[in-house]
Amino acid sequence: MNHNTNLIEDYYTLESFARIKNFADTQATPFVVVDNGIIDQHYTELAESFPYAKVYYAIKANPAVEILKLLSKRGACFDVASIYELDKVLSIGVSPDRLSYGNTIKKRKDIGYFYQKGVRLFVTDSEMDLRHIAAEAPGSKVYVRLLTEGSHTADWPLSRKFGCQTDMAVDLLVLARDLGLIPYGVSFHVGSQQRDIGAWDSAIDKVKVIFDWLKDECDIHLKMINMGGGFPANYITRTNDLATYAKEITHYLKDDFGDDLPEIILEPGRSLCSNAGVLVSEVVLISRKSNTSLHRWIYTDVGKFSGLIETMDESIKYPIYTEKGGEQEECVLAGPSCDSADIMYENHKYELPLSLDVGDRMYWFSTGAYTTSYSSIEFNGFPPLMQLMIGPETSNPY
Image (cartoon, rainbow, N blue to C red; front, side, top):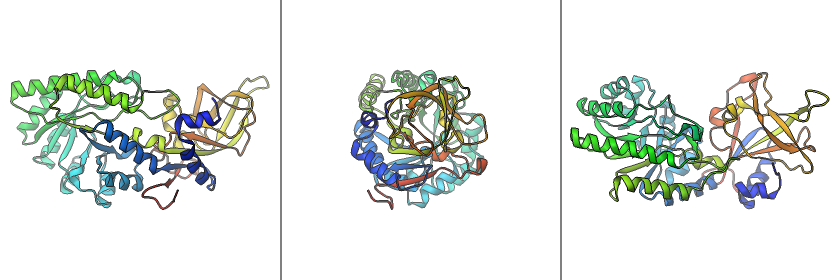
């Protein structure tokens, strides 16, 4: 792993990184700095790449109020996973017609709470949940989530737990009509950090079959496809750029649906805010496990329980920058807690400078998503990972 200017420029402009680092260097570690200006740029790119789609930001990726306010002003809608996220986004003045209850696993009373607050768009993937929606949110629009393939090519798979097979999806949409709900559409999620663009092709093909069957056999005319998220952030494992994804996915949609596309919804989270964040940690300890060991253990003041849970199974590999130079050596990276599971990278050995010392800072790139929201509250007494915002809608100026 290179630590020089070339590494920075793979992920940030030098100006953007200097802005983040100059601010970060005035703060005590550990923390994440998120530049809302970068999120704003990513939103522009997404809107221009998919001009026919509505963007429903996945709040769970990073629920910072500053991000929600920025995206609300940009006209985004929101994918909401809980009553707590609902209250948060309503509190900043977002109207309920811009919200979707996008969690297939929800309490019946929470469905009623969403309905009372004005939300009329709900996801489902099971008969019991659908009947709860019919009882607590009568007349609402529902869309059914499909099980999808492609999890083997996603760095953070989301299959198995969510969605249902095609035949059940058809049955649920028919039942929705019979229960007085509006069978509105179909959703899928090809997996977070999905590197295989072809995963969208097979999912869209499945959706087309459902649209056609319901129209021809049941006179049910679905209106919407929710394509979920999955667009990648920029980590060590490289991906195509968003424009390439958009071109191919648009081609898949038009192959199946022609120029008269149904309403298209996207639910980006990671791709909007991950690259806007830099997590800053400090080296706590450096050791070797034997006198002849060819690699060091580097312990830092963040770990799996303080923001880096997506290093579980070494799934997400974050780029790491340090200011030290010279000869490099492989190392194991571990967190500060009294838990043997708190090792971020052991099989995939990062190369870091031998000159790296206790007290030196490590800058973890592309950490604006799923870090603070995953951080534990008080494991080993460590406080939750702090997040500092710079840029639009924040109190910290550039």
